[in-house]
Amino acid sequence: MQPSEVAFIGIAGTSLGTILGAIITYFFSLRLTRKSNLMAAGAKLRAAFAPIIAEYNFRIKKGDFYLGDGGFFKDALIDQTTAIEEYRWFVPPERQKAYQQAWEEYHWNHGGIYFTDYLVGENREKLFKERINAILKFTEQ
Image (cartoon, rainbow, N blue to C red; front, side, top):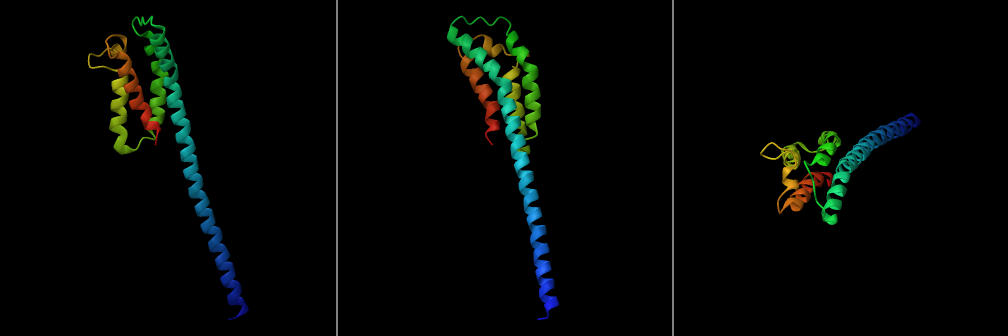
């Protein structure tokens, strides 16, 4: 084998290794970025529901559970809607319908009045927790 052939093989191997290393690094960085964005959006989704969970639990434990017209639910709705829409990009296409259904069941009942299921009735606390958990389970990917 000629010295020029040996040099060519060395240069080709080095170049191939460099290109392969760059491709692997690129794909790992894409994956890491997606995972980081997913975690941030999941944290934002959970944070959007944290105040309403805290207030609801406080009122239940206090025993003086007068909810009035549920205004505190409506006050939290804009932040929750924003977080729901931001997180939607991370929900796989095959789970989009279930995600939307969980969201609608949380904030809209069949009678067209927001949050009434949590204001009255024996199972209001159970329904509240089930419906929020149905949304937040999507962050456990």
